[in-house]
Length: 220
Image 1 (cartoon, rainbow, N blue to C red):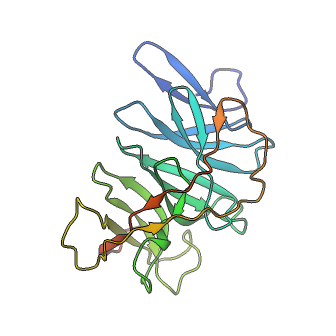
Image 2 (cartoon, rainbow, N blue to C red):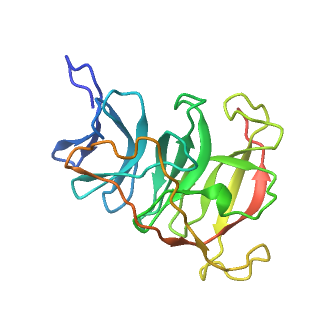
């Protein structure tokens, strides 16, 4: 949302009658990327100083900071399903918050979990972004092969489909159906003061592992 004369843009929601500003994480900017059928919105919001930004979940008037993974300094939410599962990408300092680094999943109050820790070890891909999640928890996104180190410049990235190893997806030979602990990775600057309308989840939850069912090379 950017009205005439404004210098900054904010995420908004339109209810059919009213356009509402969703706010930010303390900076001057925010952007919404997806909404589910419950009216919950995800996107990214900037912190004071507008140098770093995090993925957010907006629910019932409260914007929640979803954090980052693996010591990355920024994140970007891309999709949410009706169960409140959120996926997106975390970004490191080397890319100055402009290059997707680790695909993440956020659910059950957080924290954000690196999807690379939930797939079989020795995978041929580094999952750098999750772009969509459906009602069954199946995730699609992009990954880099081992000989790439930058998702923006790699000429042979792959699309992937992740299927959760849970009771709704039985019989997958690539699953061991054991639960893994989602660990909290400390984030630089995690003690930043946020507006009273924002929250930051700190509790740990248990998250099901995923299997990769197939790979395709997307056109770029």
